[in-house]
Amino acid sequence: MAAMEKGSSRKKLAGGFLALAFGSIVLTPNGYVRTAGAADVASAVSASSAVADESIRPFQIHVPQSELDDLRRRIAETRWPDKETVNDSSQGIQLAQVRDLVRYWGSDYDWRKAEAQLNALPEFVTTIDGVDIQFIHVRSRHPNALPVILTHGWPGSTFEFIKAIGPLTDPTAFGGRPEDAFDVIIPSIPGYGFSGKPTDLGWGPDRTARAWDTLMKRLGYDHYVSQGGDHGSVISDALARQAPKGLLAIHLNMPATIPGNLTKAINSGDPAPSDLTAPEREAFQSLSTFFGRNAAYGAMMVTRPQTIGYSLADSPVGLAAWMYEKFAQWSDSDGVPERVLSRDEMLNDITLYWLTNTGASSSRFYWENNNNNFSAEAQKTKDIRIPVGITVFPKEIYQAPESWSRQAYPSLAYYHKVDKGGHFAAWEQPQIFAEELRAAFKSVR
Image (cartoon, rainbow, N blue to C red; front, side, top):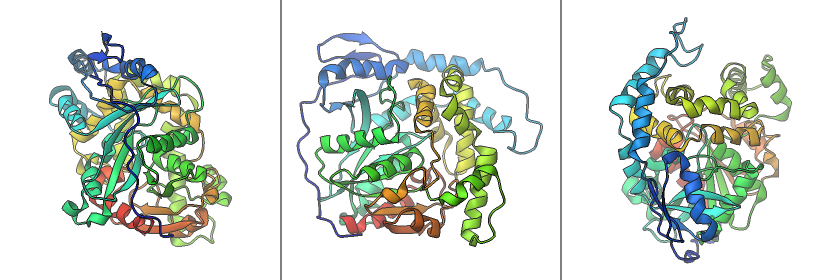
């Protein structure tokens, strides 16, 4: 990586802050007060942002108790399917696992703790391209901290990055140096969490990437870096292709490295070519298994997000099973995600999707993207000219070989394999995640 000018300018936030009490009461700029359910969060904030224009407004969450009571009632009235007829997860997430999780969800889980955790952070909302973008923004106490925008994926959310905020913003408390510090910005993708739900077409990776650059400029940063896995990697790739002024580098933990000549064979389940190296063959087999046996969820959301949306909006257990299966498959846990994520952590994420009623709107991002997120050719990675960093976690959907990575990303400046962690890298291993970002972005500070 080429050395870059140190530090970042800190312009004052444009416009005055508008107080926004969020949840059962919404105070608009005009002084009107009205009630709002948690499922109406996006429209409630939109009512105020139409007047607020480009301002950055404080944001707080308070879900009405009636919404939480309704959730518990629905859980108690679950109609369960019969048990799977196999002794493994080959037919899907097993009944006993889901029952255990849901039993806890309906009796002991406390959303108010999650709400308090979020509200203890600096939360904001701003309107970009007609959609409200809700985000967390934590500034480091160390001077010249490097701004980084962290982007989640599905079935994740801003909750994925909460445990990494400390190691990133306050490195001296977590084995780092003051010069390792980051300012951290964590937005919710449109259609996810407390961000607005797009009502027009086109909110795919490219448009979201442009919104992220607008957000960073609006926050007063004249240069920054971007990090992502899952959808976040696709959005970071798009941002890097666009190369807006001030974007110094990107880091990915789910890169798009499949060579063009192998995409068809992987998708078709063909045997691996004989000339592949051992790491390449392992990646080929992992991807072939993924597309052949484990990608049905994605095919549904890519082609019929509205159809699956009815189930995700109406059945909390249907939503929980849909998401929990991926925690089990994609985490470094041998199929028992509780080994790396607590039940509360997973239920915070699942409950967020439920209370915001974003099962359908989050699925539409797949429909808008409609692309092979692992294909270097589909993601046009060779168009990226800024420095790229890649960290390979052992239980990611596939382990990107260094050979493929260098071929896919001509400007690859950092590549490293770590020994713990899966698809939800920052959530599962926040310390390792933070150390990887420090190393990957060291030379662009």
